Length: 177
Length: 177
Image 1 (tube, each protein chain N blue to C red):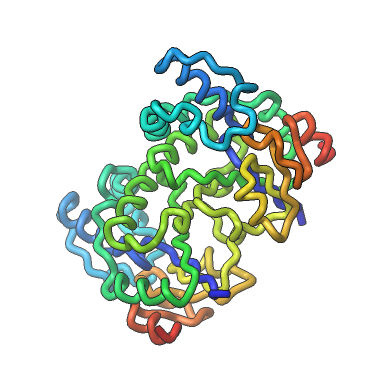
Image 2: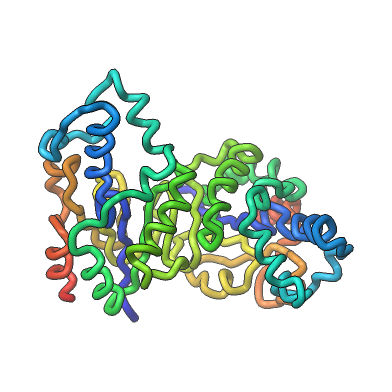
């Protein structure tokens, strides 16, 4: 039986941080780099005066749909898909509009992943898998039965408690595909 | 630690069959009863000539949002929510528009269920729970670790392999709430 890998979307398959930087530049004329975001868990909190506007982007049409794919994610996920059972598990219920966009996004960039293998949720601890690749400590810490793997994003750069995957090339090495 | 119950939406919390009957009457002037649907696994297949129209309803705005709540579901789920850990698990990814409507529907009728306890998926076998209440055999048969409970709907009326819950009053008795 294939081992099962649960894989997050934002900041793992999809460049959510890049989308935030793009919106910050377009909407607020705020030129920020990925390095500026290191260690910050809450984008909206970086500029308290703009917090409500920044939060509103997440509820806007197209915010999720327009994200770039992480480098090498398509090629590596297709290889993983042959060797492992893949589920894409995204805490998207907080942003109800995003789910339709996320289904379309997956169909465009990862058409080999069947819709039955997409999961939109809040918590992730009730998901059975052998591995979880995620960028958020709150998901990794609650993932008790399998191996949590932190996918590097600016907000988790100082987290040391988990095996780290810095990019999809490293994921391919870890999973030997 | 509270035991965990995974609960389906359509034809368990929400009267999906009633909604289908309502649309069949309004759109096709087809007067059908719940009894007429007994043993039919596929609404759209009952009237092959209308199959594509019937299928299109599932992708229409408002089809899911306008469903009635099953009798006693609100009162019983609120009691269950005190004693058990509740997750609402709906195979809604097939109908991407429905997910936003389902979040709103839950907020209206079951506001005590936090969004983090809503799950939209395809398969359900990778969900860890002590019980699954569902109307579809394909979900019950794959639910290996906990106890599957079939919630009575016309299409499962002849299914005999599972403990049956006919209505939410019976669910309250089963779970002793």
